[in-house]
Length: 590
Image (tube, rainbow, N blue to C red; front, side, top):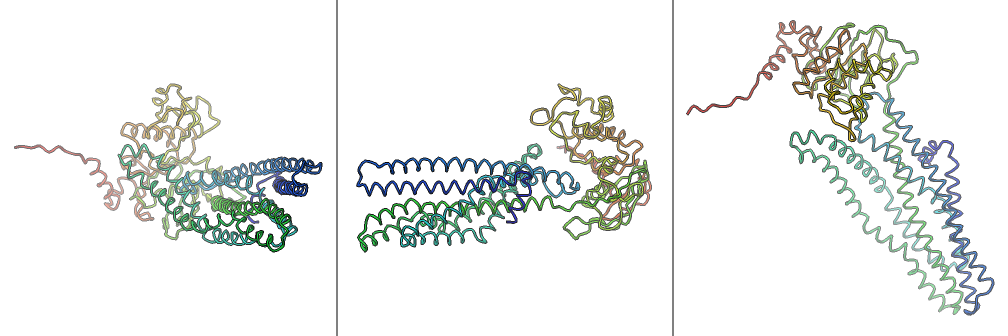
C-alpha cells in the first residue's frame, strides 16, 4: 500500500483512472467466466436433447456466449487504456520530479553519482513503474474476483470435485510463497544493484574509449565492465538453479487440475451411477479450473512487478533524498569579492576522516592565490568549497564577509566561475556552448570572448563557424580545444571570482600556451584561486599556499617560499628536474 500511495501521488488529475481500470478489468474477467458458463449450458442442453437439432434456447446461449466473449475483450481494452493513461502520467511526473530535484542538488552530489547511475535510476526505474501500473495493476482486481467467483461456482455445482480442485491450488500457492519470500526480495535488490553497476560501467567504458585507444589498454579497461557482466550472470544463474525444482513442480501442479479431477469423477460415476451429471460437472470444472492457474500466475507476476516497483521507488527516493544544502530565507547580496577560509574543517558526507583540518587563508579582492601540494592533499576540496559543492563541518567560508550559506545559489553561481580539468561541453553548437556562460550575450560579446580565449583558430577551421554542432552529429574537439571553449564560456560570464582547478591538465604544449594567454585575460582584475601542477604557471601569483595532508603548511610568494627552503622548495626542485628530464640516445664508441 505504501508503494501504491507513493505512485498515486504522481498521477495528478488522473488518480481515478487506476480504480476505473481495475473495475473494468474485474468486470471483463467475470464476463470471460460467463462465456464458459454459457458453453456449459449449451453442452447440458445438447446432452438433454440427445444430440438432436439445437433448440431455440441453445441458440440464445450461443449468442450470449459470443456477447460475453466480445464484452470481455472490449472491457479489458478500456481497462488497459485507463491504466496506461495513468501509468504515462506517473512515469512522466516521476522523471520530471526527479530531474527538478537533481538540478537543485549541490554540485558535490555529481561527484558521488555517475551519469550512468543517475540515468539508470531515473529513466529505467520510471519505466518499471509504468509497466507495473499499465499491465499488472489492472489484473489485480481480476486476480481476487475471478477465483472467488470460480470457487462459488464449483462448490455450487459439486463440492466433491471442488475439494479435489483445491488440492493443486493449495500446493502451488505454498510453492509460490516459498519462491517469492525473503530470498526473492533479496534477489530483486541484488538484481537492481547489478543493473546499475553494468549501466555505470558501460557508460564509463564508452566515454573512455578515446583514452583507451591512445594508451592501448583495451583489454585492461574492459575488465571492470566485463566483471560487472560476469557478476550479474553468476547471480542470475545461481538464482535460477535455486528455483529450478520448485518452479518445475509449481508449473506441473498448477496446470494439472485434470489429474486430480479425473480420478474423483471416475469414483463418483462408479459410486452414484449418474454419469450424465458427473460428466457435465467434470466438463464445467475442466473449463473453470484454468482460471485458478491463470490467477495464481498473474498474482506471481504481480508480486514480482510490485517488488520491482517498490525497489524502483525506494532507489528514486534514495537518489533524490540526498541531503541538499540549506539556504537561509534572509539571503544577502555579494558586494565585495574577497574570499576567506576561517578555521575550516571538512569531511565528505558519509565519512569520518577529515579531508581538511583548520584551514585559514584570505584572498583579497582582485588578488590571485595558488594552491600547490601532492595529489590527495585537499587542494581540489578547498577549491570546491567556494562554489559550495558541500558545506563545511566546522568554520566558515565567506565571500565579501558573507558566509556562503547565507548567499542564494543563484547569487553564488552568478559571482563565481570555475574551470576544472574535466571539461563539460554539450552536444549542441559552439555558440550555444559558449553562451551557457551568459545566455543574454550578444554575438559581438561572444566573438570578443572567443578572441580573448584564443579560440578564433578553432572557430575558423569549422565549416559552420560558431554554428558548428559538437557530438555524434557534428565535429569533435581535442582536449586542449575543449578547454579553450570552456574558458571562452567563463570569460563571457565575466564573474568577479574565478576558481581554476588544473585548467591545463590535458593540454598539449601548443594548446597550453594558448590556454595560459586565455587565463591571463580571464583573471585580469579578478579574485582568483588556482590549482596547478605546472609550477611555472604560478610564479607570479600574489600568494601561494602549500597544502599538506589537509593543512596549510606554508604560504607566501614564490620567492619567499624558495627562501624558506621548506616543502615548496622541495616541490619546486622536483618539478624542475622533471622538466629538464630527457631521454638520451646511448652512443657506442666501439
